[in-house]
Image (cartoon, rainbow, N blue to C red; front, side, top):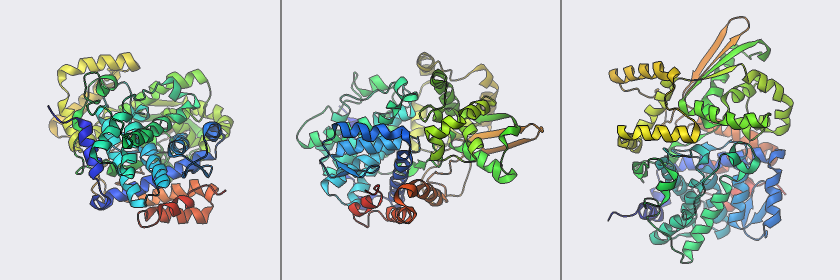
Amino acid sequence: MSEPYLAKLGRWVAGLEYDSIPADTLTAARYQVLNMLAALHASARSTETASIAGGLSGFSMGAGRSTAFATGTRHAPHEAVLSNAAYSMAQDFDDIVWMGHTCHSSVFAPLAVAQHEGQDARVFLAAVIAANEIGGRLGATSFLGPLNGQMWTFIHLIGAAAATAKVLGLDAGQTTHALAISLAQPNFALQPGFMTPSSKLLAAATPAAAGIQAAYFARAGMTGAPDIIEDRRGFWKRFTYLPLPFMMEGLGSFWTTQTLTIKTFPGCHYFQTAVSAIDEIERVHGPVDVRQVRRIRAETTKLGFEATRFAGEYSASVGRVTPVNVNFDLGVTVAIRLIAGKLTSEQMHPEWLEEHSTGIRALASKTAMIHDPQLTAKTVASVRAVSSGRAALKSVKLSELPGLVRKYRQEYRSQLVTPSEVAGWLRVAGQLRQKRPQAPERKRERSAIPLYFPNRVSIELNSGRTLSAQSDLPAGSFCNPEIRFELKEKFVRETAPVLGAPRAEKAFAAGLGLGDMELGEFAALVTKPG
């Protein structure tokens, strides 16, 4: 009988040591910490998030040593992570790794526990990385399933459990049980609670709190089922149409944390390069007068196209643009960027959206969203650059495809290939026969593998002139040599209104050196002043 998957994961987490982690991986973890604190403070200035502090005050005992950074109050670890992860979720201004938005739990769970337990910054960073590596892999095994993207809320259960186990110094057996306990009653996110109402804010927060508790229970002697993932009635049975176990491989050789991409614009990750394309258009041609726009053509990947199509089912029922439904419609994202001339947290405030709602809807109605199979092929090519991704793609049998198509149609009313896409896919197939498509080359300084999510935007003016640009690699990719500049610009811009500009600059520098300073000192720097 083969060793249960969780036993392998638990042994790796328990054996992970700060000094054995590659320098690039540690750098990516530091960037992720800074990015998530920027996202937290950005949303904390919006009236949309007032319910977080209000709700927490209703049940929190206020006892503990873990900080809720948006308010400066202290709580027990599981309460602090509820607050911090909810704020960081609010504007979709987070980050991703291969595969999943692990950041809400990978940063705020170990930060809360390390503060509470008096652990140092090195232990904290190792725990951040452990959460990314474990949570990202579980998400990747579930790629072909009824949930996707931020709806993989279960990754915060296992990620927070892994991080907490690392901070607590649990052995391999205890860590395995912590992971198993966290998945004993996994969260299954329901789209109506995520796409429209503000209950979305708890999508990562609730499972992250449960993951922390799972590790504390494991320390006290509680046990879980180490085979709970692969059991015939276990996790994969409920959360995947077709599990991809190869995605679990590569611990210690392939670092998921190095696939980090921070969002330089609030909104869906699939649309980041669409905003960058508009930035490029205006850099070359100057600001676009939206009054002169006749129509817009936004060409995107299959993931971007389906996200927009699916989100439309919910945004249409609301009838207005809100901070919750705004981020998953490519046409709305493009409209906001053109109307405001930028896309930052300011445009996510309900007051701004309400004021510009008519103009946003009008401009979005002029935007045609089109799936370009060649753009999707670039994303697939970057997936193939990951060894476990190649193995997973090869493991899918042709005989299994009809079943997958049927299940996606039932769940999402989605077609993997539509009649209008056939010609594009035939062109891609022809290119594949001649030469395997390669992800676009771009100078990079690190060993990380870039993950491409390309978009092409074409703006036709009333004059008949068309302005067009394409962007392939998100500006916030860890592979981008300018990533530190992009991160600093975001961090200082979004935290300075709360911390003050000098303190924001100091906090950013401290975050870059995290591991060589006291964690408490850093936490004090990034906490809202009392």
